Amino acid sequence: MKVTVYNKEMKKYYIILFSLLIVSCKEQNDKKETNQNQTRAQLKAQVDSLFNAHIKLDAPGAALLVSYDGEILIGKGYGLRDLETKAPITKSTNMRMASVSKQFTDLSLLTLVDKNLLALNDTVYKFWPYAVFKNITVTQLINHTSGIADYEGVFMKEWDRSKIVENKDILDWLSTNPAPHFNPGEKWEYSNTAYLVLALLTEKLSGEDFATYAKKAVFEKTGMKNTNFYSFAHPIDIKERAFCYKKDSLGNWKNVDGFFMNGVLGDGAVYTSVTDYFAYDQALRNKSIVSDTLHQLLFEPSSMALPEEAKYPFEFLKGKEEQYAIGWFVTEDIALHTGSWNGTRTIVVRDKERPLTIAIFMNSGEAETRSTLIEATYSLVNSFLKSN
Image (cartoon, rainbow, N blue to C red):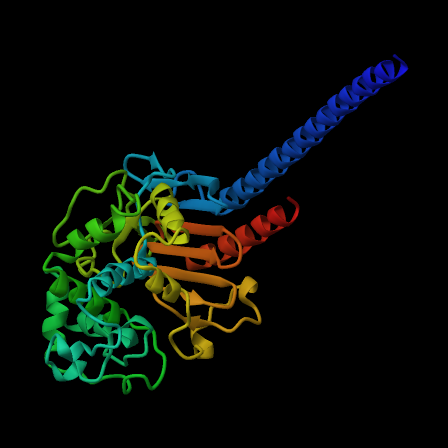
């Protein structure tokens, strides 16, 4: 009888103790969650203060994405996408990516590698028997070691600006065998011409218009519902589009979307939003776009070390060796790419060791502002993650 009483008392004791432990754990979890919410709110307030200090409410602005571990920590816009209508930039505003577009050109091409329609070590001469392409491989186009001539300087000087430049016009120019900057594989030099050729090659081998193929093979596959390559020569409707602006000689903002070279695709010309880019970033992290083998190559250096003048001066890259991979500049722990075009400044920073991505898309040509914003945002987010 005494044993029975003892067991009942012990059972009662353990039940009370277990209940207390549950309450204590819940209180600790609630406290931790409260602290995390407070630090997250503090991060958002700090970022708002940063962006509001550099972007006016009635001027072109920026869209910001900060994502971590499959979640959008911050996704919002600052400033206006359209100065005439005063429409604001939001996380669903489609902004011009400039050279951040190059990663999508590469992915479009890589889907054709998966289909065995070409190999990365193929020469471009195999597909167009022009002297200018002899000994240039697909990989050399991708990693900017082809030495191919620069189209921009030539077309800025010699083209009739009443007509929109298109990819086919540049291919015609390349067929005249313009002198290369150096022999293929000899050195590293950033090349927009190379990425235009990659777009032309994708079009040739897929049998479809490049923008149409990229839409189907990459954008739709990754959940980028409202993302497109856009040619001013063949305009389409861009949902919630941000127009691009530059200041004129009097300091007034001028819409520059009608620029005569905005018909070129491949080296730039993607319009996307924070919402769509987040969907893409998750597909990229889940390795669901191309084959596992090609996903492994995306962030692997495929070029020699970059010359000093080509390296990014950002503080968070200080002391790191930079190389080029497939549509990305890479260090041991970071992948990034900037974009600069007429009325556009963009940057994407992707942590290779943590599930962190920061993207800033601007519809103005303010390069210094972009640098200030990414440096400060990276620092704030880094401090936030270390404290949680």
